[in-house]
Length: 434
Picture 1 (cartoon, one colour):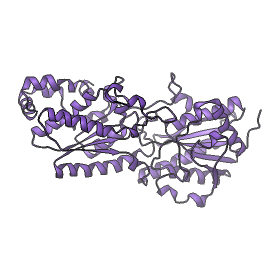
Picture 2 (cartoon, helix red, strand yellow):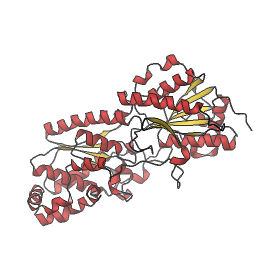
Picture 3 (cartoon, one colour):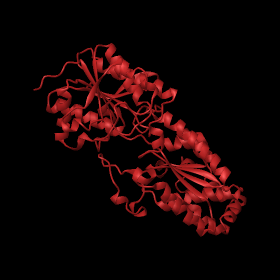
Picture 4 (cartoon, helix red, strand yellow):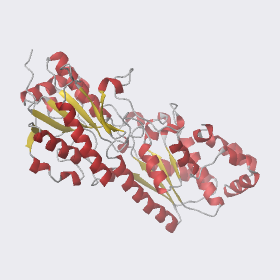
């Protein structure tokens, strides 16, 4: 059995994509740890070098981090390196941490990083007989980690704020230029960011994968929903609009509808590299083709929104939030239960103003062992209000003869033909079903 290192050295690493507020966590973890007598080591590039059995790092001082909480990006950089691929990789990580004298680890990242940190800590205890206390600070602009209800992941609010400002500008562009703009936002599985931006900006409509539940999404369904919104606007003399689509729609889409999807590049965790597939361009071409069939020649622009949000300087909310989370992470690592035993690891979060630790075991999917994904609740008032203000065809519209006549006219169809062609576009209307 390897002797457990003393608690005097704490390591910090960042995994996954950037999110505003990372430096705020590094800032507060470093200050709180040093103030409690710990040495702090900043580990570069996530698990990348640890997987090779070495550590690339620098000691962090209070002077190094005193003002970085104001800045976007990550002074420790980040990577998507995945140590869970084999026991050998996990063993290399454990050995590198032990050799560096690190007995406590703060991992900053999303679901994949949380899972990796959990596996490394478990491997250290089960295979090497060493307890490396580990705490994960949940970071993602996707807001899809299983935190208590209404608790955001840090980075989300800054991304939503900046994304909303961009979409507001695009809405003015659409009106001024008399065109439609299709915006695809980041969000690997869940639609939180797309919905947050769409609702806050007052975009014409927003589509998220949760509308379809667990079933596959067909490209034609998405195109038909977009087309009916275009038609509804045209019926009122408005030939412009902004539609937002969450990129998670792509991951759930039937492969036969997206040529080459089965050959798409995947990251080290096996996820499709959605950024390598131009969903906004696919939708633009398919929608334009559909509208031309109706004799509607519409100016369409497509825009992908995501990368410009991830390294933005954090807004006050995320600065405040991340400094609290970093403090909580260190307090957990220093804590000890009354029986002398301590929880080996978990995720730090704020719940009703109180810092809590969610044990890794409690947030895992029992079937896959991976960290559960938090999806948008399409039965919630939050979602229902968003749907209420979208321009989308509803079942009730098909019962309104006057409205239906106007829509059919805008689509250059008779009423029966319009209902037959576009009636199925309301089938995924979960807001009306709930």
